[in-house]
Length: 313
Ligand code: VAH
Image (tube, rainbow, N blue to C red; front, side, top):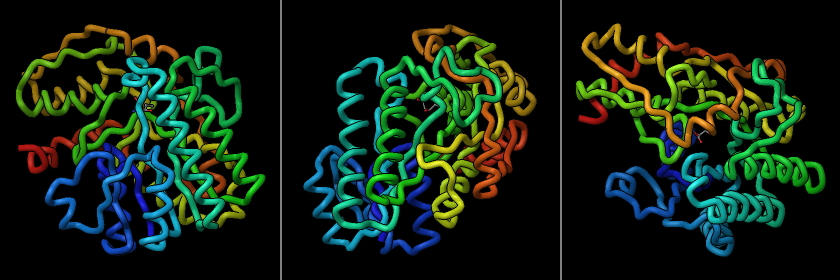
């Protein structure tokens, strides 16, 4: 069975649904620090779990005969800057808990997301390569960079089959993001749908790597199902789909909602965005496990605007 830690988050919500569709509801245990909503209890097994509680994770692994863990719980970039110590403790302790349990209980696989936040001001900014200078200057980015080193260490020293992707900003309509610097690109759709003015917390030209959630889910499943011997990267793979600025996504939405208006009021999150790449080189992911994005900006905008009403109103 598969245990998902952080099943209630932006990525966790969608990954839980996809994994249950593939492996069957009863074989995917959802867990989150938040108490379950009634519909979550109807869907399949749920456990309330704090990702920092190693004993509780171990007892859930034993109780449900867990063979794979997806650790999706984390404090993201913007929220992490408000609470650096807690962000470091949660992001690192949860990963070390899971890696140690995977080793002790000889789990089949572990999935743990990294992020473009591992790159910093001195990383190459365009077409950022898999291997290069990484000087992240957010607690979130530092925790993801340290986490990548720990994943590689547990793989090389103990043979733990841990796999990871450096996600760009993720955009979807089935779940709300929490505390990220790229969350504006989700919020903007809800404002357009409600015919409300959108005040963007990044500058109009803050160009960032982004990915539509269906592509992120597919990349995760494809990586986890790839033969272990094909994987040349055990820190975390660069993956990318598109890059755009707030102005570009606004213009794409405006084609569908001509009266939609936007203003730009950069706040502390602009500094975070400035430290990240403009675009990524994901050629190693393509070579090792056939990564190829399906959605670019226009397709994503059309798909979201078509589907979001049923999800949120
Ligand atoms: C964040 N959505 O903004 C996350 C992600 C690349 C961005 O790591 O913190």
